[in-house]
Image (cartoon, rainbow, N blue to C red):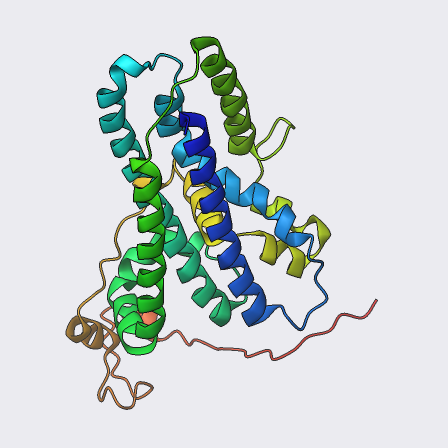
Length: 280
């Protein structure tokens, strides 16, 4: 196989894996809804966007038109490193897709801004996987091992280097496809989450995948990530003292510990509005 052929097979496997995630999402939440099966084709651009973004560098390295038969041993080492990176990144993306499918069942939406504060919920997520989704986790590991066996088989296949001018043509074509994939469109702006919903909510949700929504959210908030701090929750004992709770079992029975004399005379009135209408 030529380097380009190996690359295309890897890309095909990854796209099929993403479609498996989409099929599971469809069976669980959309099989009774009127959603066109064209969504499986439309979703490819969101899948390929993530794949091409993270694979662009290793694909460029293994397909760069400088390799010759004399450098076959060096190429094998380089290819193994690049293919290992692509495999690990694919498994991470599929893990994000799997987590997103579970999250969708609870919220009816894909993971987006929630990822910005996910660090506070790692303990809960781990507990949830162990207690409720252990079988699903085992199935995911089995699927990952199947992919690994295919990955290794392709990596170990003898490589054949075409003539330099053919390598150059293949490199240009593959690079063009990757660049288009990294944008998802031929327009000026790359595709975003909102672009999936031009044909309706259900169509949009089925077009998207968790890896894409998480990546686009993180990328869009890249400038603000440094400002985000891990929540430093107040110790329960200190919070109880500040609130002036006489009994934590009866939180509305409080002790006024306000030291400001002026504020002690103020009352707080809470209005609970269940529904409101406005007449024209």
